[in-house]
Image (tube, rainbow over all chains, first blue to last red):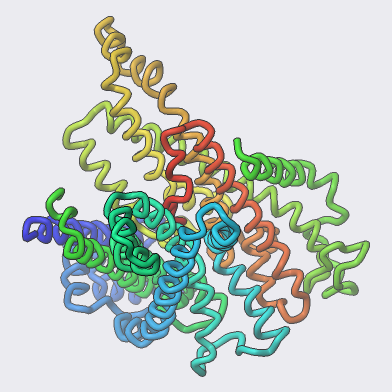
Length: 307
Length: 277
């Protein structure tokens, strides 16, 4: 277990390092003078010189990267060009919105996905199965930004049941969470169904049936418990994706989360903010995925033995 | 091939034909403004109504199909080429370089597509060409991994050993023996990837980071439609509907092709084919 743990953590650390290099070099790959990008086109030579010195642009690139990484590790992601405030402060200020819709979406997707997946597997090749699989297919194929708009059109503008944009009241969270959770719900539903179908044909389930256990007990105690292991790992992996998917959903519903912060930073060419938000979201994604793999190994001993 | 896959192929062919013949079919110029007739509802003259500038939404959808499909095919084509070369090279070369390349591909593959797309746009800027590159970059690892996997197993086969024993050069072995035998999974993956490409490209444009107005790319139209959703709901409905139909069709066609071409995978029909958007 310790070997698996250390290997997986090393992998995550490497991915983080690679991401930091990518995010750092991103800005340096942009054609043009970085100081000019920061200061704006109308800046005079003295201003540019000062900015170069302040940002350390006159130093060699590896040294610049070193201090970028060192500062980032200490939670210092630089100063936003647009607001003049620390990038990290802005991110932490916006993150709760993203976290709430992300957590809401993953809870919803897991509940709906596992429930409907079990139902589909129990009704294998019958109407219920077909209905669930069509719904899952639609949920997976529909772009979140369109699904969100159509829900807004239906539930806010036509029926008037829910508020459309913004994040003022708890009711404002309903549509974004539904929108963000739909795709993952579809994926989890398919996964649960196929895992259940794999398991119900196996000997230990037949043995449970042969002992005369009730069907509910066979399904829940024997089949589901074994089918859930791979499903839970998908849930963890999807959570990382959801945080990234929030970029689109936050734009649909005008939610001031980290995703919207990133998009606005790109539109404003606020480079420290772009680097900071990208690094933040990517690091979150990598850490959640690593945590998922580790939990998977805790739950299922076969993983750590194989590794 | 299954009925669903055939129907999907038909849908893709119809949308492709609409895109190809858009100038002949479209009743209006997609950029032509008619401010006297803005916010018009669906009618005989304007099947999907008009937007805030009085532009005919149906004509914009038709021309938008050219941009959306064009971006999808160009980016997947580019990624297919680059990914195949990386995969073949990696498999044939082996060693440290292979390991390093594949680690890089794994990191890219694990990354959410939309984030990679945004990163490319930050460096290159927006516009059609850069959107194609952004989507291609995020698709390369899929193909590289796939090709490397098949190439490694093909390189072990007897006919390859025979060819090498006869003194065939690396290029001859790779392109004469390995690539032709690795084509089937590539066809399937390309089809599936086309759907993802449309999702990511229109997502970038929806965020204002891809194709820019006034060009009628579907994602950009949807972004405009979001502002107009109260006044003319059709402007928000139509582009997203066509994106969804195309994505769904490519996904069903890809699944159908896999079942038809590769019996080994038939079991996995409902497996976790996680979307990356």
